[in-house]
Length: 65
Image (cartoon, rainbow, N blue to C red; front, top):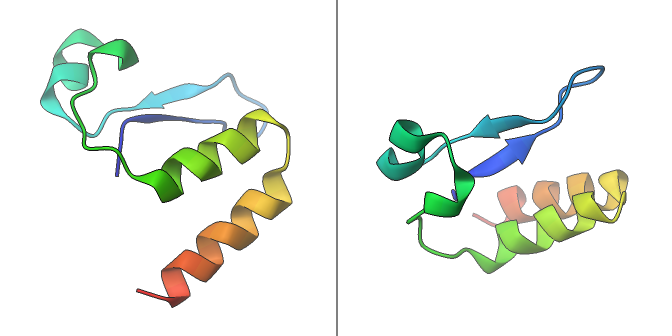
């Protein structure tokens, strides 16, 4: 998984670090995680406000592991 932001209900976005660079700096721009096209697509859907579609895509990806 790559560093990303979570959006808990009723709260501001929260940084979820997955690599030590971001843990140490607190800046997502320092991320050194390998790219995952599936997660990038899910994040894109979330940015576009398509939360149900992102949730369904993630469910399908988890079923196919």
